[in-house]
Amino acid sequence: MKDEHARRRASRTLAVHAGTRRSQYGEVSEAMFLTQGFVYDSAEAAEARFLKASRDEFIYARYGNPTVAMFEDRIAALEGTEDAFATASGMAAVNGALMSMLRAGDHVVAGRALFGSCLYILEEILPRFGVEVTLIDGTDLAAWENAIRPDTKAVFFESVSNPALDVIDIAAVAELAHAVGATVIVDNVFATPTYSRAVELGADVVVYSTTKHVDGQGRCLGGVICGTTEFIRGTAEPYLKHTGGSMSPFNAWVMLKGLEHMGLRVRAQAETAEHIALALEGHPKLARVLHPHLPSHPQHALARAQMEKGGTVIAIDLAGGKDAAFRFLNALEIVIISNNLGDAKSIATHPATTTHQRLPDEQKEMLGITPGLIRLSLGLEDPEDLLADVMAALDAA
Ligand SMILES: *Cc1c(COP(=O)(O)O)cnc(C)c1O
Image (cartoon, rainbow, N blue to C red; front, side, top):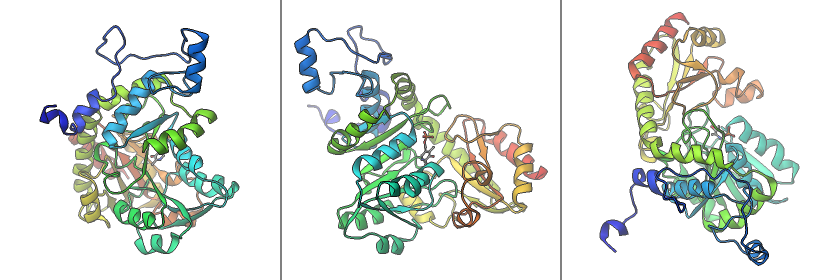
């Protein structure tokens, strides 16, 4: 084999080609196998396939589908894991990764700064099934050290938290977790698959909401769990295929095509995010400007070491509180008010009254979700147009 074939291909190449399965027609663009079922040549063939199906023998789309398999293999190649299982949404991935491996009596430690629905699984669902959950400040390594016990089965955290953009030290937490044999599960949405080094830093399982940067155009829900073949096929798949959390072939096709240009989109969006964060720092109407790659970010050095770019999202805190935040939102002309992120369209969100509305005030305060906090997901528009829009809206606030 020639040298250039022996080395692991670069992610831009993998994002375009990995996982491709061509039909007998030799199509260039990946085919969408929009089918729930598959025909067997004989009764014996059906029996044999139910007994043991190879990776390219399919039974039922809840178990697997060629388009879904292409997406799974492509994102596993990008993430650097042996395998992946695609799910109906990001939450199906988070729930599937946790529920498939945990049982009553197990102990989990999790960073407290989480997406609202992740927090619901950890605080409400897992305890109902006898799983003990300890929530801690994920940026505090001493807190991880105190909370992780010899019987801890898993640790779970968002590598960059939503919406206050705390950065968690994947390598340091993984070292503490692995010392007791716990599985490290990382929700890596804000880092994006483009800037992920999670596996290299020690994560065992990486989950994404592909609704965000992988689709990147706000069309479909999706999620994925990346890990070893043993975890994916032995633990996650049996749980997911029997409980119905699998990704649809149509959504897998959208995600597969999204991966081809995700790197280019995410790089442009992350550059815009950093440019706008830098321009807004010190603005008299802002109490805080948060972006992991700003020198003023509390975990700036860690963010630089862990992520090649700071991601596509920034958070700004209007000193005038909720009223100022609402005036700002209502004055935006290009940036839309919504709650997705990683989209080609720039999106502004007021977490305290929308995505994190459910949380009690003291918990909001602990997570930095102040009344003036706005989460801005930067899209693919012209960076100067976006900056002008944000500056004009700040004037109006
Ligand atoms: C959006 C998001 C999820 C949930 O994903 P869905 O696709 O909406 O189910 C989970 N974690 C993080 C960090 C997210 O941003």
